[in-house]
Length: 96
Image (cartoon, rainbow, N blue to C red; front, side):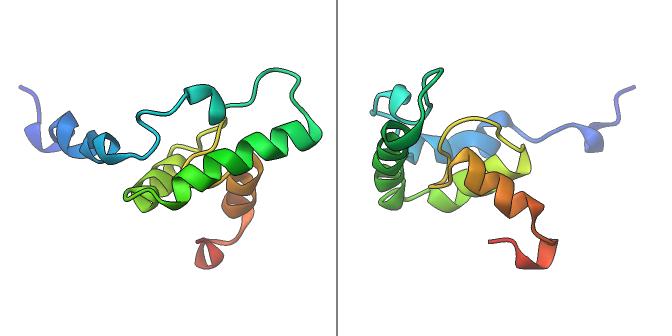
């Protein structure tokens, strides 16, 4: 018999915050760099994505989720790939 206490809770309880994301109605390509994008074009795109994140009511949940799952691509919770890597490289007491 399945040990019910080990099963995850209802999925909706875990992900419902995403319905409130400021990015939901935005073009997803703003948050993920195309192959080969470099330099100022990449920086401008990431800054535009971060501007949307800055006004998002669920930025904290998004950021925590992206760090927890070690999201490898895109801007999540106002952090770029490189910024997330830097946060994850810090000792735990120094994390955001």
